[in-house]
Image (cartoon, rainbow, N blue to C red; front, side, top):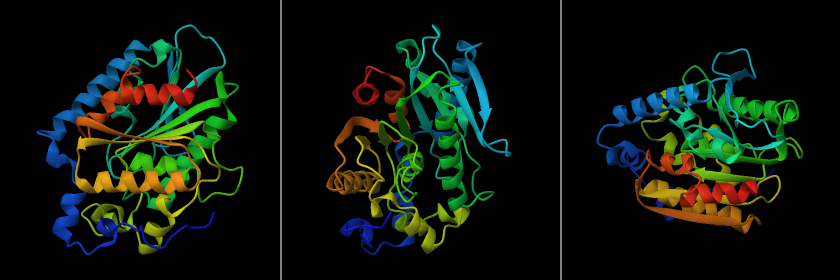
Length: 294
């Protein structure tokens, strides 16, 4: 798929910024009192979700590395085939795992929707190109086994948070036609979609993406393999760079023919946006439900 532009077209994202400014631009922890406690809470809630789904939870492996795994949370009644939410976590490609992400199952299985949490190998052990390839492989694994897993392949929605939003978007572009997971829609939460400014921030001390990587894996530079509906959401209390990244991406893919709902969530910061993902009755959850056709 060909790139649609060289820069982003955003004076803010393309303009000169020094390292201190960029570090602040991409530090959502600035708006959280204790990020360690927040992520520890995610882990506790994920353990509770696994226990609540005893007999309806399993870990599937799509590759040889232990992190190349998918945690699948199933509904109780066994009705098939079922819609599926696939969640791809963030952590700037270098932190967080499925063990801190399963709490997003929230009320979805009670609403008849299975939830898959896709994990991947983190930087610096894996490069950005390898992480993108892993996510694509994990999604292909799900698509190939949908009937055996009692999943309706026509009712799969990808939900990505932070760089998980970038990874979800890249699963739908820059791939040969027909190779993308046939998602019914994407829900992209607090994402980054233009990576060149991120490359010059503290994030890249660990990730080590090159200029070529930043260009090749910035979904704002590409058209999707096919137009598909999107929900793009950002919290009011997030750094301005996340607002600009989300706004620009929504505009760019709308121009490419994708129906886009853009949600600015009042009072929310980068981390508690996921509480809205877990709640089918929140404005963000209702967006997910619409895409599922639920």
